Image (cartoon, rainbow, N blue to C red; front, top):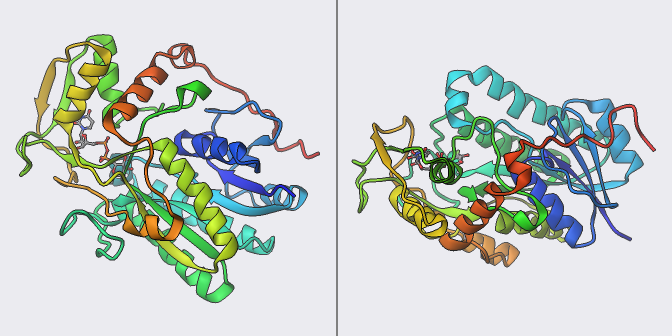
Length: 340
Ligand code: UFG
């Protein structure tokens, strides 16, 4: 029988790609999300507009749909906003996750894949960064991810709740064939911002060119969102067969500078981008590169789409979609009054 997976934040950037990956592998999916972003029109997926702290609705969904595993992507994701208003981040990312976990426990669901982040490491002592590297997050956002990982470790020991935390490095790219891609409001991430500058003829801001790197700009590890989505499915399948609580890095293991990304965008778009050099952005480490050997060992996961041209080309194709340009807003098919 097909299993049914609950994806929180399944209408968001990484969540929607994960939903597609699960559908493509014959899972049934139920999504809960607060926002109307990306929905996939498919008979095996059902969307609910719902908060992760809405325990009574989630219990009803879990029982009605016989949910066997959960991918928990719903979270606030902006580092800068978490510094400005940490209370909002701790409330949403930690307190509400605790409520969700207790709802899942009440429904005897013991398989959870958690969206974590390279932000748990803070400023790295060395790169590439293995999972054994000390976790010293420097932003409230990173701390919320570390706290949930710690809670999951305790829940495994005490209640046997199996979990895999996936520490994404720089998620990037899109799946334009399915109208899925990156669209945050506001958009702070480098690749969509450089693409916007190229398409609109605006100047592209570079935060710092005095880092101790070959061209002075920050080096990041960009990993394609489709590779990240596949890792979620593999993690769910691993947890089905193995009782563990674990954390794995997801990256491409290749470092690219801000200027290298801009060059790639210029090549793909065939446009010249004017540059605007600004001071460093607070909290940006010079290098973030993943050591992903554990993900390969545990999940047999390796990135397939994470070369820079594939990432930038797919992100560009998505940016040119009518769905993006018309500011298309989808409507949830189901609200909380609808339970079959
Ligand atoms: N950058 C610019 N100009 C821009 C936007 C970004 O120069 O307009 C630079 C940043 O300063 C940074 C690099 O591009 O050096 C990448 O920045 P992003 O904002 O795209 O990504 P981050 O590396 O800041 O953030 C990523 C994830 C976060 C996570 C963090 C871990 O998106 O969720 O890594 O440190 F928390």
